[in-house]
Image (tube, rainbow, N blue to C red; front, side):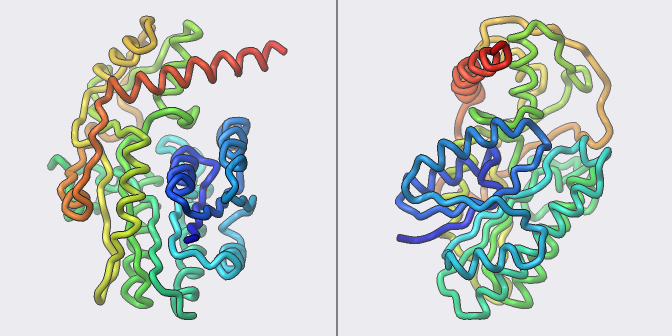
Length: 334
């Protein structure tokens, strides 16, 4: 049985990736510090689902601490690492910049160092996949975003840390021949999503009769990508191991179909079966006007690209949310 390490396993994408590899017959070792950036009850609920599986083990540790990841790597001997642990959020990075340096930069460097020692010690058939973000494209006017486009003008500290991760990774691939792939995710949504992301914020507001904040008056374009497509992309790319003098590739994982925030909210209203109260607001610092993924590279590598229609994905999300929200409300009342 092959072993994979998934950092950020209690998170939205980490939970989905762990579940996918378990279903495909892998032993999954989950790693997460379970911080309180958002309600930890959702993180522990995800972990409870994973820990019910026979071949899942979990380490509650902080990757930014010296030696932590090295010891887990040496004990578990994985053939794949999917590094998803990070401090997320564009706007929060403006308020708390050092949280991003500690988690996104220092944490990433700890993973790179552990992987380079692991490969140097003779590990075979190894592949590190790590989370980047569509935010690295920053203020680019040219769309759709292709992996070869410039990423020299990030619009937030969060984006800057993700670009830094790609640069560090490129350097380590060059110096130490660690095979790795950076994954630029585009606006991920779906069941078990983060409470600070728009699907949960909007659905909660609609369910509770509160207004929702609609930035740039609804005229922002996003390439909303369903969680199962993100997970499938990671799974397929895990066996596309970079080779050569610079064994490092970067891939977009996005839906290649951007819609306006206005269209997105209207679709959310449809699947929720209720109207939202819109609080129209200007663009926020750190936001970009449009994200749009060119998916030619992932298709060339795997023969596949994300394809879930927005309404189909939001319908599944809404069904999950209604059950989750009802359960949460009962717990609050109790």
